[in-house]
Image 1 (spheres, rainbow, N blue to C red):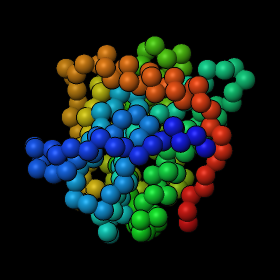
Image 2: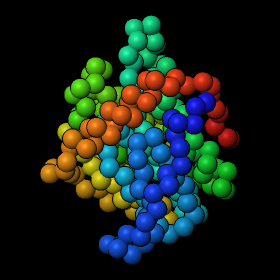
Image 3: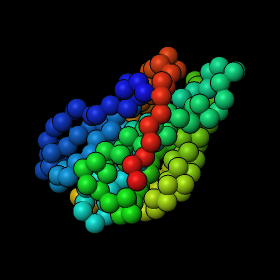
Image 4: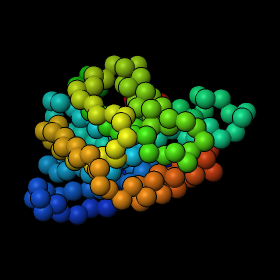
Length: 201
C-alpha cells in the first residue's frame, strides 16, 4: 500500500481559543491520540471520520476522499479502496493503542458539493455515502453527522470527550480549499493502491 494515501498529521500547534494542544489535518492525513487535545480540519468535498472509544476517550480523525474514476477500464470498486484504506488505517491505529472494537463510535462530516471541476459528478455525495455504508458494515454506530450541502466546513474534534464543533464556512476562501482537494485528488489518481490491509478484530 502506498503510504502517500494516508499519512500521520504533523502540524502541531497550541489553540489559544480552547487553550489546548492541537493538530491540523490536511487531505490524506490522520491522527490518533490519548491526550486531551483538539483535532482540526477543513473539509470541502472530502470527508472526515472522527472515531473514538467511548469508554477510554482514545480517539482520532482522518481526512480523505475517494479516488476519481478517471479511466474507463477502472471499476467503481477500485475508487472505493482509497476510502476503505483511509478508514482501516484510522481504526487499526486506535485498536493498536488499546481501543475496544466494541466501544467505538463515529461522527462524520463533509461531502459538500464544491469540486465542480472533477469529472465524476457529486464526488462529495459519493464520499458521504461511502463513509456511512462503511461504518454500517463494520457495525460502528454513527453518533452524529453533518454531510452534503454546498458549504465547506471547519471541524474541531475533542477525542477525550467526543465533543465536536462544526463551523460552516460561508465566507471562506473556497479557492484554497478547492485547490488543496484537487491536488489531493490528482495525487490519488497518479499513485494507485498497491495492496490491501485488513481490520484488526
